[in-house]
Length: 355
Image (cartoon, rainbow, N blue to C red; front, side):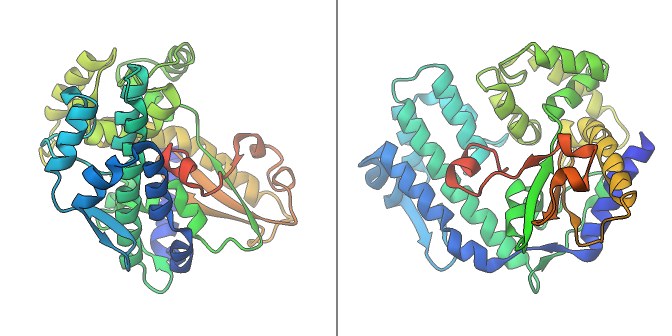
């Protein structure tokens, strides 16, 4: 396990030392907030003006939108979907969270329950996405220095979170690099977060994988499809415990008691994901990273600019390869684990493919 963890931490150190490219000009051209709001209007109709935009602060220069008064929105959600839907969109303090993850929790709950106003929930998802991505890009732009971000990961990846700008681990960050002349790919082991949780419950890796392979619904939030839940697991287990309605609710409570008994427990910072699960995700990913680095270094036909590891998270590694090369040529063995990066579209972003 130590060797695998070290492989991931080595890539973290590269990001800290060399920085992560972030092209501000691309952000100006994307108009993601505008496109999200345009989609939202399609599903919300006149409600978009009367219940949403009338209570928003829109900063056109920073391409952001936020609410100066959330009470009308709370009332709108309660009247349109029902009071029970608040659990999907509040944090542990009961405050509304405006981001893609909580919008997805709201929408898929309505979809699973066949709510008569499921289209309104879809419109609200796009509103939440507009606010969330606007705020994320604003922080990223403000943190960028001469086209680069220099993350500082806690204890070289034990926490794997840069408090000043946590969005550097978003998959869409791969699009924000200078990618002219390159093709983009990523490796992301399937259902990695859920498997890591099941390992924490005492299952072996093989048992956890078999358990997941026999399910279609989420294990924390049973109203979520399995793939969507995997994308949201980190948020759900760090900030959204109120949303949990699944077969492992009791086990989560037991793990929380176990976590609080640890000498390292900090009531303000500790959570189940960081404290118990992250080491498992990094260990599993580290197996792939080790093999990836070995294959690159063992290919004497390559020059350093032919393939670049340009993205690393606890569950994903991203690469870019010169246009004139094929991934099969560059990675004869490892290519089968990589997928081409999805296009940067509103729907790919909103439905979690680029989170």
